[in-house]
Length: 226
Ligand code: CA
Image 1 (tube, helix red, strand yellow):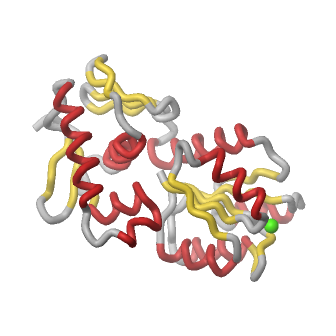
Image 2 (cartoon, rainbow, N blue to C red):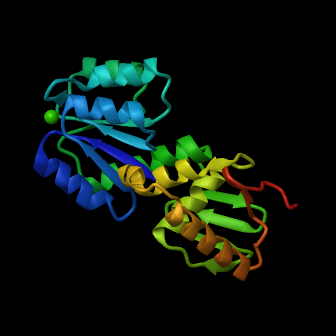
């Protein structure tokens, strides 16, 4: 899962990245312009949005997201604590508002709740036939047998599960798993490797038919048994 951290204070940005990186692919924008460009070019599971930024106001970015019909989740993280800002932010489509200073575990919990709400209808657990995924615990089992997955494999599985029956393109997977780095790849070797490993691990616990390859396009997870 991919986060955009919009934060102009270097120390604050660094501590957010240090805290969130074990669980999410994190990108940082430190100015209004940088944030604007990234928000236009990419999709994020969650954007942490500071409001007072060099070059402009975070609320303007929020209205641009809304105008462009982007579906990214947004948590405003701001020292501005006026009721007007909160109301304006929520009206402009922000999902949550956290006043600075805040505790990192609280932010972590809010991000997890937002991702859960938006992608999986508020459920902690996703069930697909014999496969059970516990999203906050980041564990997966097939008919009770544990799947031991790397972070990328788990994120790939979640991405497919968030789009049941739909084909997820190789490009979308590359972007989801590596953020900006996806631009550096002119092939999809890492995507192929993660898919191959995930398929192998599923097959080892008897779920070899869950993920199908749509040649030349991408991958899909089947909601029902073939
Ligand atoms: Ca600021």
